[in-house]
Figure 1 (cartoon, one colour):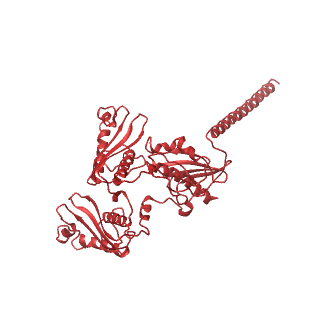
Figure 2 (cartoon, helix red, strand yellow):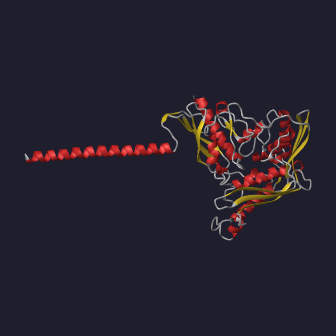
Figure 3 (tube, one colour):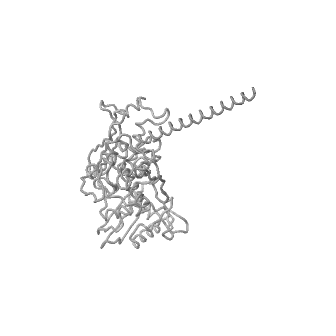
Length: 452
């Protein structure tokens, strides 16, 4: 009898414990669920009903149908690297309800302003597509299937271009032997009739002549450098387009029989000639007016404002300076020299790196040399480890001033919005970042149109 009572008490205890566990677990789950719902509500998200298939749509990382409409996650290229954004739409997939920047590495105090409410709130309640003043609505993903690479966009500039009659010349930079690549081109009746590629020294020495005299030998039994240059020129005249010159990573081509030299210099200079003939303005074809120019960014968290000054003389960049200056005159360059702004214990100071960038621009006369990774850093200049996005952006502003080209924020909004589009304002001084954000919204909108 006693054992039965004990067993009964134990059974009751187990049942009680299990019941308490279930109740506690349910309570904990309810609290967790409620907390998650609260967080979701605070973040402006709604219940996910269905995940959409994004395969085949470059840049669309995720898309879901929600109880309120749709939410699309987009990745696109900005100025300093990739920008990842969440774009929410209404149930019709037409009206933008909210835009959030999840990831970005844009220039601090300039492009990074796309994360601020002042910029993002413009998209709430507007109908897509959206675009900046004076900007054409981007071609849709449904039409292209993917984003158009910048290189392809550049080539498109010459598509169906009309070339004006005349003689044109484009020159590169002197090589280690003091020889400067140059291409001359003649256009008659709108057609390229003559092309010449050579490399010329200050004393008039020509690579073509040297190759014929045996002073510049490619191979013992193959075509001379002059013969290969002439073959390239003839191919351009015959085809009237640079599209035929496909190149590998070493800048070589198998499109022209017998040509084994790197042809990147030829293609680049021939393109400049064609741009000039077509009246297309690019950085390399800009005529810089002599003078002193200055471009400033926005103050950073320390109250320092980036600025680039540039001097142009005889149409060439002769001096460049990059610094960050406070309202009291404090300079980052001076701070770095005094040990108040230290990059590394044994590496170049910030000032030394800034000077290396400036000198590289003076030597090359173009910003094309400053290739950047997603963090805005470059391996194009030895010893430079700092982010250079601010320098490049402000230097471009100075070049625009010298060339008489209006900066995007000064360009009047002459283009009217399409009937089904909305105009939004970009971040001042951050056209590339602003455009990337606008493109992301349009990519999300186009995806929904194609997916529905």
